Amino acid sequence: MEKLTKYDLLKNNPLFEGCSEAEFKSIAKDSYLRSYKEGEVFLTGDSTIHKISIIVNNGRMKIFTINPLTFEEYTLYVLSSGDLFNVITLLDGRKDHLSAMAIDDLKILHCNIDIARDWIKKYEAFNKQFLTYLSQRLRLAQEYNISKTFYTIEMRLAKLIFQNISSSNNEINLINNLSHTEIAKMLGTTRTVINRNLQQLKRDGMIALKYKKIIIQDYKKMKELIDQY
Image (cartoon, rainbow, N blue to C red; front, top):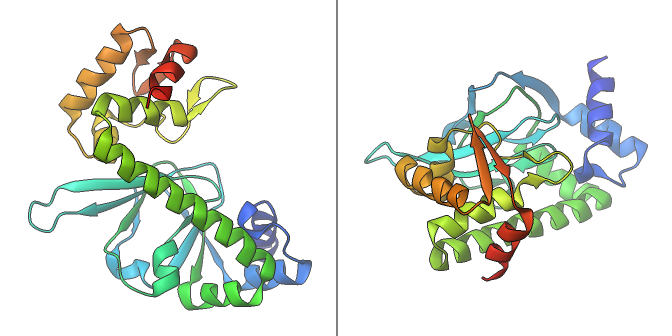
């Protein structure tokens, strides 16, 4: 039953689109399914070098690191359904000192990282999808560095909100229900600065604020703000 569950999860994951039935079965055999509760830190720098992790439900995973001198936590990014954690270590085999925490209840397919490297060599369809996924992650990292260099916190916050909106129901995807402190960690600033800029966006009529929830009030006005840059 567990193998069937893993098989079905893999078939619904875009990373494995185009794989054959035999390949799905082989990859399912290579991987193991684990569940994690909201708030659980389930990977640390010591363990991430040994495995990859693929999110196979609608939950979110926070990837963060801690400054060894100040013990200050910094959130690098948030992953969601279909994302793969440990892409860089998968490619170069080097430890990266990152940790992972479940923002929501998660179901994760793990695989030994050495076995996963063989997927790239053995399965052409996975290799193709993986390269596409890798390019998307690299572009996001590039855009983040440009944003951090040239944009104000208000603009970076507006872009973060706008880029994670679900137009069908005005729900924020990656940052929905996150505290202002967590959003601040994502943008490399403080909770006070985030609060101040959220209030400014609210005064400008672009957003409304509820408990741990941000709603876009004026989609057109916010898009015009972002399109200036």
